[in-house]
Length: 473
View 1 (cartoon, one colour):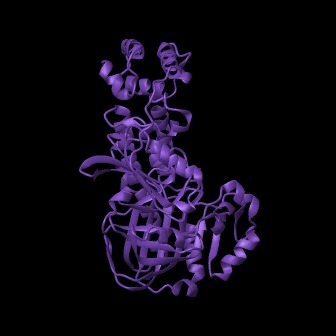
View 2 (tube, helix red, strand yellow):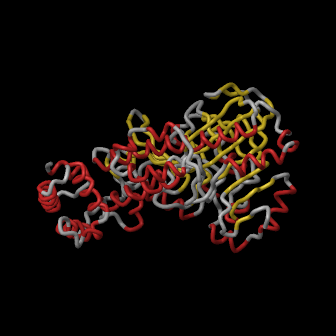
View 3 (cartoon, one colour):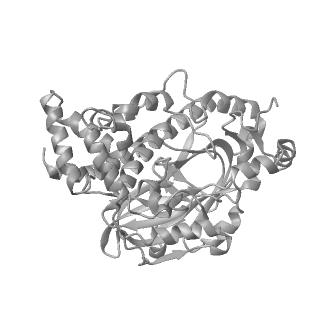
């Protein structure tokens, strides 16, 4: 092991490298394997305070804390070019976050979608292209959060004719909640992925990933049946979808606890490595892809993508089996991810945090709310938007404010007037919490074309006791 190994982990150059090598040599003398030493060194870098009394690593921990207290300076006065869609309906905080993101020394291009609202680091609805670096919080804490739509070869009126059958299917084949998991774990080939064994951080969370496989999170995650009106025929990996009206199943979820842990672990390393960033920039800390930490995050992000896709695959397979109707086709897309893409002849890392890939001809799903329509769209490939579009209606109200303002009895009555039944959901997810989806779609008419419209009819979301609605309430 040499100094380069520590630099690639993200260690700052200087005295900490020498102290770290000395600690590594002592660990090796005690019989520790090199892989375990590297993992320990990475853990010390991520949280040096936790090792300030460790007999082996306390000297290294103190050196890293001193480095953090004497941070380097960054030049943050140059703006990379960026464009905003629907500016008039985007809150000031989100606009400020986007302005900070394009001032990073690694930023090359940016774009802000019309559903944007404030998040951590990059705003939700933000798109950022960087040079050879990935920002964990510009991907988001729910890595690979995605949409999946399954279209059944049957008209939508069957939903009203056999409502109890569909209610039962949703209740028995979905599992929601931040800490919840199936009592009988589901099976999928994603659990055989060798990355679970070889990745130093992912392997810690394989057990919880196994338990939560095929489940959905809390917040705005949902599984719902509805009516899909197709205005233009389109091709999907599972079949052709002609013009017509169909029963459809739509789901929204991500990589669950696994993605959350990966996001926070590598964000901490990134923030420690760039401790000189001003406070308001700290959640934009990045990892160079040449660092081992950057490469590890990238590998774990890819695994989270495969895992999130498997979650949806299981949900849709279970429900298709429960209702026993033929499948016509399907559409699926990430909206919290980073891709290697060619922009203006450069190979860049394109982060889409709450943004839908919208390259030319690429299909995607943009949902509204539990009462508002969702859209199946075909991307137009607009370079100024970094081939992106909105990922939904976008919040216009905080969850805390929603709990104060709304009443389930009133909301549920209005939903029933529209022919929408909610099996369970949080008061912080009612339609009033969201922007008008049609206004969002109008603001990005140059980015995507609509090929189908989905109207929710039977909705299930997290019903954990947090001012939530249940039919028995």
